[in-house]
Image (spheres, helix red, strand yellow):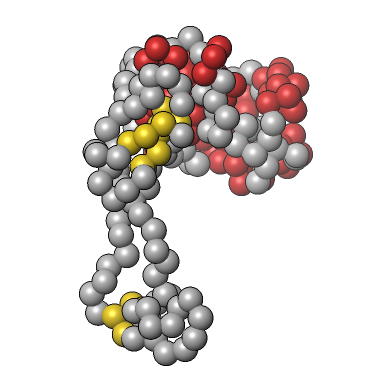
Length: 211
């Protein structure tokens, strides 16, 4: 329900859903038309259909060892179900959790899943993080740049005729003119003084500066 709909809109719908179908058995026995009608306004109807099919699978065969065998369940959803519903020792990593882990260089316990999601969604924001109120700001130090965007290959190029900024610049055969640039870190990094870390050269280990 939360994949395409804001939390404040989901909460009352979720509570109504559970009041109507409090178990997998009861949802499995529901008519498809009723499920689709109850799902309206919560994103793609196929998600409601997959939830109905998954309930039917659980009602008839029980929970599978591999949750991705359920209709509509991928690796992240499987991890979320395992952590929040089944108490399994697995950490669901969404964009918020990933951002917190990248900025701290730490891999957290699955028990911290909800706290990490909330921290990433409200404090450790992508563009303007609220480092001053962060409970883990002392750990938010710059970590090694593990992944860099590779430079445009220079092999097999053809000269380009013309005028202007692109004149005389090589172009990969069958592709656009490469834009000048430099490797970039995979995501924002932050140093111990809570300022953004930028790479000012193609040699990141020698040129990391606070922005």
